[in-house]
Length: 254
Image (cartoon, rainbow, N blue to C red; front, side, top):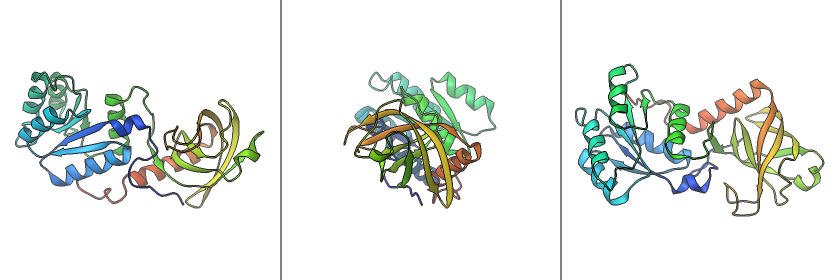
C-alpha cells in the first residue's frame, strides 16, 4: 500500500523554494490551507490579520499570498490594495478565497489584481491547479503524492530495472526509483498494486537522473502513462485525492 509521506510529495525542488502566505482569521481554514500546501510541496507562512499579513509580505516577500476576503469583515480587499500599492510587494501574486455563490466578489477580486480565486468549499484539485497557475512555469495537470510501491517493469531494459519502485505517483505517471536509469523515450510496460488493485500501464520515459538530480533527489526515471485503463487512472486519482485530504476531509472550511 502506498502512503503519503510528510514534506514534499515528490515535487520539484523549484516548488520547495516557493513560500505561500495564507491569510485568514479562521483557524480551521488556516490549518487546512497550510496542510494542503505542504502536501503539494510548498512551504507556508500564516497571518491572521491584515496588518500581520502586510508586515510579513514586506519582510519575507512570499511567492504567493492566499487571502480570505472576509477576514475581519471583508478587509481582504484592503490587503489586496496595500500589497499592490507597496513597491516591495507590488509584484507578489495573490489569490482571493471567496464564497462560490458570489459573482460580485469574484469580479471584485479580479478587479483588485488577483491572479485568480478559490471558492468554498475547498477542493484539493482546484486549489492545486490555482497554485500551479499562479506560481509554476511548467504546470502539472494533476496532483502527485509520495507512494512507495514495488513495480514490475517489462521491456528491452527490464533487467536493469529489476527491483524498481515508485517514489511519487500521479494519475499521469510516476517517478520510478532505480540505480540504472534508462534512456529518455524508452517505452516500458508497468505492473503494480495500489491498495489491493492490480494496475497495468504502458509508459514512456520523460527524463532520467542520477542521485540528487531528480524531483525526489533519488536516482531514477520520470514516466508518463501513455496507455492505461480509464478506470485504473480514476482509481489512482481517487487514491491521491484521499491521501492529500487525509485527516482534513471532514473539517468544515466554510
